[in-house]
Image 1 (cartoon, rainbow, N blue to C red):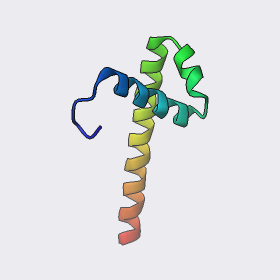
Image 2 (image 1 turned 90 degrees about the horizontal axis):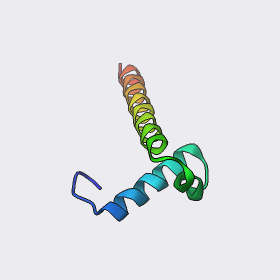
Image 3 (image 1 turned 30 degrees about the horizontal axis):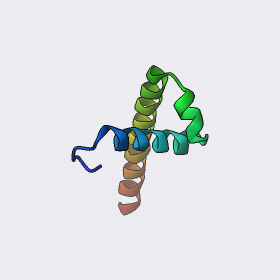
Image 4 (image 1 turned 180 degrees about the vertical axis):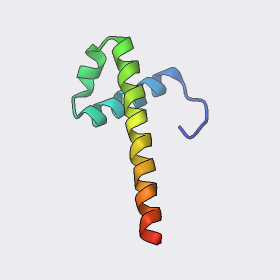
Amino acid sequence: MKGGSTDPLTASRIIVYTLAKALAISPLEIYKMPVNLVKDMLMIHGEVETLKAEHMEKEMNKARR
């Protein structure tokens, strides 16, 4: 998971788990989604998490001052 290669089955399970947790829905609902929607939702989730991390870092830097 940390930059190493992952077999396709494991990668798909990680995607399903990640989206199910992020969207608070059953993994079975992820399997019912079209592939393009899954890709889009995963990309959006990644961007949201990046923004959260950036915001948290800014707040931590403010607190240190």
